[in-house]
Image (tube, rainbow, N blue to C red; front, top):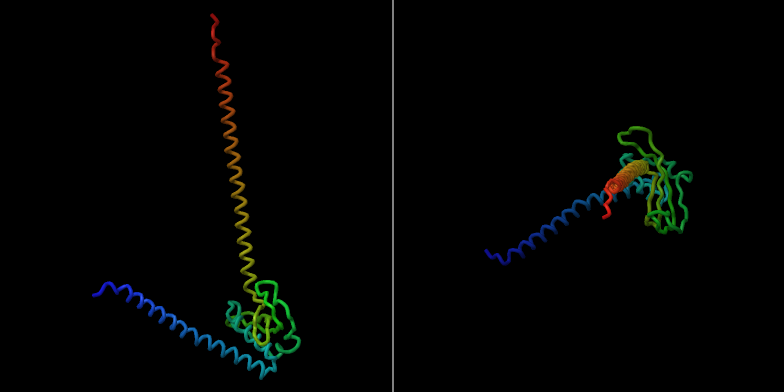
Length: 210
């Protein structure tokens, strides 16, 4: 066996395995992405052809349906024909930033559309959902919706931070008390030592003069 070429062979083998794993990953994710794109296009066509929705509004609604279905709060979104009338859907020329937060991207139009969020297993009442999409031409660059889940998480996070801050103050107070106690003990020890030295100097007998 030629041991000098063993490291090179091992490296080649590792490289082949890495390439195989990458190709396998792409092969697994590609069909899923293709299925999502097909479902999206089917919904857009349905909204446009059956419900006379504007193509941009239909695209925003289809994207909103996909995003809401990934939330723990909803199974899917239903869009009745009224979702696409002028009272529940709009296209507003914008030519400005989509929002002032993380999606501070300039868009030409903002599309809004409303739907009904259906709970998992049909439990509870349907929720009124509003989707907002930012477009440049026919390309969506930004998206937001009234997801009920993040605010609850934010509230829990704020409560947790508040409790940590409060406990920190209590710990700080104890530390100050302990520090002041130490200083009191030190000053008391100094006073006792000073008093002891004074009393010993008084008791010492005076030297006789010859």
